[in-house]
Image 1 (cartoon, one colour):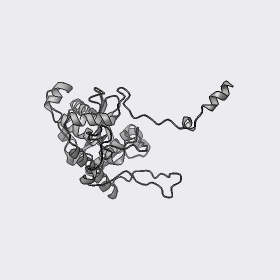
Image 2 (tube, rainbow, N blue to C red; image 1 turned 180 degrees about the horizontal axis):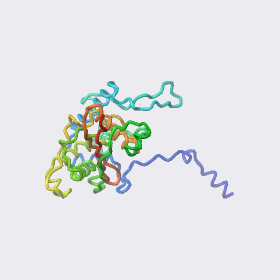
Image 3 (tube, rainbow, N blue to C red; image 1 turned 30 degrees about the horizontal axis):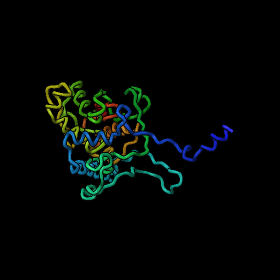
Image 4 (cartoon, rainbow, N blue to C red; image 1 turned 30 degrees about the vertical axis):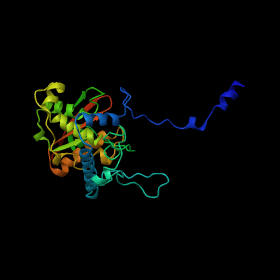
Length: 283
């Protein structure tokens, strides 16, 4: 009778798969809330965020049409007639349309929306990493050298998404390079507000002195070198795949644009930051 009693309590909902959590494990807060608070702290306006998001989608669409993102593997989805041959999250809209969207996290006064955030998406990425001698012995043509990298860690509550600021400053100090030496910048775009808040932090002597313990500001990457083929806002952010996507995009841009050095940076859960210097393999 006890077993029958337990069976009577079963409901179909108990068999549904548990959705993965997207909350920051150390604070219990979603990154959207962190992004909203960060944008407010650095006084990044809704209009500025929408404008940057529009830039990302416009550049991604342009890169797609120009064949710059053709290293995407074709995939077949069960139940669909046509295969997927390109990223399908790119949406070029207008600032007027973006302004109509309601806040997605902090309501009603937040500034982070579905349009100025990176969207959850499926995806996978892969690259080959080996010594130059090994690559040449296998008859492979390297794209780029991995020259240096750093990891940083900061307050996971108020500075969760400021990893690019910390890692860029530490990486430049470590390598002796300056922003002017970098030809290609590829930063992870978690939110438009996150990118713009990082720019403001990188442009602040006060922030550098009080939080980074350095005498001068890091400096802001020039937009004419920054994420020119779109970014996570427009291409999506599959967890675990974005890192390789950033590095390969940086290498491909170096080859296409004839640059020498690329700087890749990203924020991550737990208040982590990552930075990497990639150098184009000589022709």
